Image (cartoon, rainbow, N blue to C red; front, side):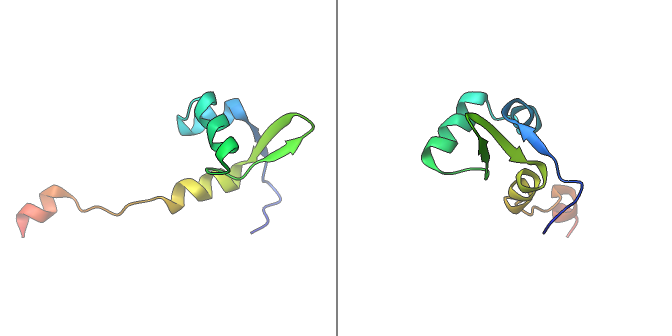
Length: 71
């Protein structure tokens, strides 16, 4: 899905957004796992929409414990 408002995020931005350390993001890139990324020279960037999509795809549905006990 192409988003004309999509922006590139720095590694620091992604770290702040996701809680992953800079080292963890670097390790993921080395292992070719984690978020898709782009390299411009030696600099690494991530597309905001792709990071958010990856985070959303790892969602685990749960039930509310109070609702479960009421049954």
